[in-house]
Image 1 (tube, rainbow, N blue to C red):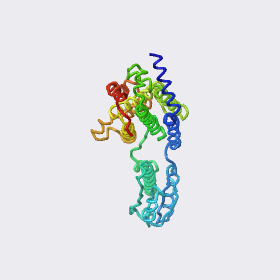
Image 2: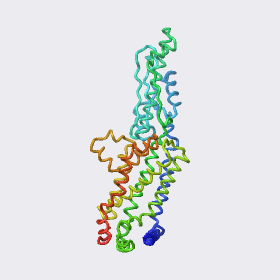
Image 3: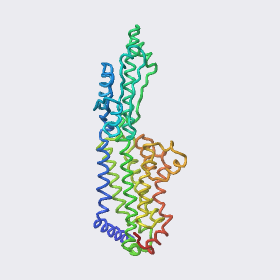
Length: 387
């Protein structure tokens, strides 16, 4: 048995060495993905987003509001426009993400207590940029309104403490659990990078099995395994499994050791989730190949399923807020279970007993090909390669 295992592994390593697709998919592209996402969001969240101003009042009050807006970390006032139409065209040209409109006589109406209307416009084409700028613009205008109210109350003889009580009767004290800096790199890279690696795992699994049909070597593989298709599949995919597990372990070291991401859970749970994700991806790929024994079609289905998992995982839009059919469908995505293990066990520090159903689901995906071993054996022996 050990000799057969060794012979199949040597055979597969020869294929990996001669075919550059394996090196690109198992080493180059995953490392590129790690560097790309962590570098792109290296600041934690977007900084100095460009915005414009339409200041038709041009008073000391309006200039003070603009200075406060420009002083915020997320916003950067890059242009002044003479009209709303000109600023709107700048948004359509993607020169700015938002603009603030201050009409004429704003300061005079403020002094006369006539409630002037100041407007702001922002684009949600980029959801994150729109949300951040909406927060900044609303904050600046709220502070400006509070400053006017405080000056009015002072003129009426109220103390600063009394004025603050009138303006903000309830004080909000917010505490962000585990990520106080609102670092989007920790929120998103920890989902995007493993999802991309699982995409490579699924694609390479179906590609490897499809190449057996293309080379017409399925019978040879089964003969080397003494007709045991399960043993043949395990031995054939073992080099890829070890390489992808090494890559996931490096991903854990890079994210939590080098970049210092927050992790309340232990290293053992991190590695367990990563290894289960690799096995689940390979199991899912073998199952799709068994059901659709064509390299092109099975790789297309795995690509589609992996891309959908970016949405169905629930990191950007929570799964419990989706429609009921989509909530049920989310259980069929291996990445969804990995991300729940990460968010509950690693990010929040809960024990494995809280996510054992998701660990069991990953194991189920890994063992799913056992239901189709006869089908895979028939495919390897009798099916012909189709473009």
